[in-house]
Amino acid sequence: MKRTPAARRTVRRLTADAALLVVAAAFVLPLAWVVLSSLDAQADLRVKVPDEFTFGNFDAVLVPDVTFTPLLNSLVLCGGATLLTIVCAALAAYPLSRYRSRTGSAFLATILFATCLPITAIMVPVYALFVQVELIDTVHGTILFFAASQLPFAVWLMKNFMDGVPKELEEAAWTDGASSMQSLLRVVLPLMGPGIAVVTVYSFVMMWGNFFVPFMLLLDPEQMPASVSINDFFGNRGTVVYGQLAAFSVIYSTPVLLLYVLIARRLGGGFALGGAVKG
Amino acid sequence: MSAVGTRPRRSLARALPAGPGVVLLLLFLAGPIGYCVYLAFTDLQLTGQAESSFVGLDNFTEAFGDKDFRNAVWLTLVFTVVSSLIGQNTLGLTLAALMQRASGPVRTLTGGIVVVAWVLPEVVAGFLLYAFFRREGTLNAVLDWLHLPGQNWLYTLPILAVSFANVWRGTAFSMLVYSAALNEIPKEITEAAQVDGASGRRRMWHITLPMIRRSIGTNLMLNTLQTLSVFGLIWVMTRGGPGNRSQTLPLYMYEQAFQNSMIGYATAVALLLLLVGSLFSLVYMRLLRTEV
Image (tube, rainbow over all chains, first blue to last red; front, side, top):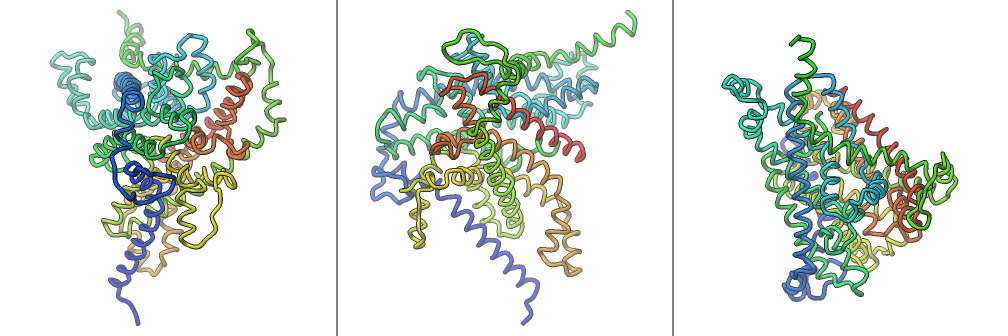
């Protein structure tokens, strides 16, 4: 029997659905573990539905030492670095987007090159340098390095978004006697709100999840962000309480997941790649 | 004022807003990289000796003579090829291609789950996969349920376990890149081939793949660079062990610097890693140039 094209399409769709669901099932298992374990008083390492749901794990970790201080540290660190990144990136992107010059394109090429450098590789020299200039174990030192490491990509993205703002709108402001800084602040930046939101959220999410930088540059446990303090669940506390570890992981991950959802819809899933892959 | 005199001054004034960013980049990115080049030729140590001295290429000859270093190079290669070139890239493309045909809700569900794995903080992802691969973890429970033998994955096959972890974590990126690329292929072209009787596989091989080859190039490049510098994921899952059986170059570098206090030597390793990264970065830039 010959199948009609419509029937063939249905079969194809069902096959694709089935294959995708298998992959989804494989991908969801580790995620299911963290959600279920956080609600399980007897959590261990395998996925299982708790015999009895409880918020005890959340109660146990929602204390200053374990959760609030590290999250506040993360916020100060990533918030500060993001702010610095965005201000520097917006300022640097402006001449790059508005004027063509040989220095500008050389700078842009350097920026693109730096975007791809493996930052992990330079952490040992950065540590050595920070010891020399006494920036080691300081929050501001870590913020400065974080901002610098994120800056190339932020400038690159920001420039691409800025290119989308027509120059004519600015020229009108110039005729009215505005300086270029004023037109950047009053005309260009307000028009690229979504672009700025993307760069901001992207930078923040990257730093929020970054482990190696604060792990290397901060020493005092009091200053540790959540990405590093999560390690305390292992090691010196003796046996690991997996339920609490899971609860903490949920609390720590939620802000970035929400931020991602907030911007992903508006800019399509590939927002972060827009600048990187399309050039 | 002459025109000759104003032009450089005007372009300087125009470039002024870039100042803070340039200073930041010079001090905190170019600076460390320059320092890295310098340190790599010294014998700086973390403790004991106060002064360091130039040792020329000693660090590099020592590295290439060290079997732990060669082991780390080999493992980095395995990790990159298995998890990035094969894993993330192929799975990402497959998922994107399947999503073109799948029904809406399945596409949203699968895409959502894969992206969550990508957005999660690195350390959390590490813990989730640590729990997944442990002897008493979920993978063995599933295998047991299927009546297949389980094993202590993090002990018997640590480098494969961390590679799979990296696939789990990083596939979303390729999936998003390829979905965007596939969506840009005009429907008429594939339909015309279909009318001409080309099978699905032939269409994939002769039409789709050539049309998205630039996306493939840039995606491979970015994945490789990303994978080359993975630290937290492996650190959380295995600490590079057991022994040094999952110790890729970043972990080797860390161990040399802080367990063995050999800052100079570790920096030489860092410089090599940086050079490989730069090489990939240059290829990536070339790919972009041909694209735009």
